Length: 289
Image (cartoon, rainbow, N blue to C red):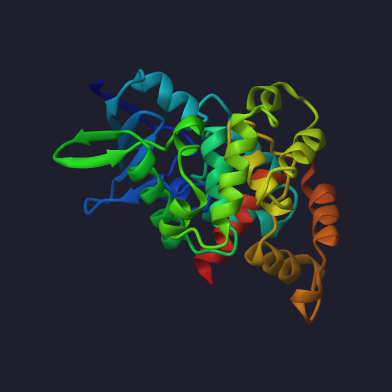
């Protein structure tokens, strides 16, 4: 474990608030100075952005520069993506302008699976609390700058938790789902390495849907926000249904708008960039509501 620092200037399409508060991650918290601190694998990282200068400070096991480039998807040209999407229509162009600094993180697949199972019918403060308690009880402790942090437990570490112990951490009805999914992954009934190798997004989605607690929306979130990195999915929650109805479908009762109708529309309008289009629309609609 070592302390490291890494600094970048004039990174295009990088805004820490947009990245950490667009609903894709749950282990980053804003500090009093406006920076964000999070836990990535076996590393605690602080991200402080002042205008176009971003300073990364860490204490952990990995090389910080390599970690930052991979985790924040810095090798991808988001300017090009935004330019392409902005030409589709004025609605998407407006949402892109609002959330111009969004980048889709490369989050650990295992952690993303469990995190989004926990996210079902839940709010972000409660999701964060549950994940922190799971990490504190089953992950590894890291002490840095007088504070204690905890890594997200590995499959093996979390497999030690019983249903009752998970329930005591506040998971509610999700306790059995997390327990059963952990067992399936531990026993390689679902092999996470094989999921990375599979090129067909629908095949990966079908496999994810065999996990307890993983429905269509959770599967799409896992596909989009993890190291699987599939942009050809369109997670639909209440905010996405609302924005798609208000902008395009215009049904007087948005609850009657089907997910299939939204998915078909998104595929037609946004093509294989529908996942990142969804993030711009979601962030804009929820943040300005």
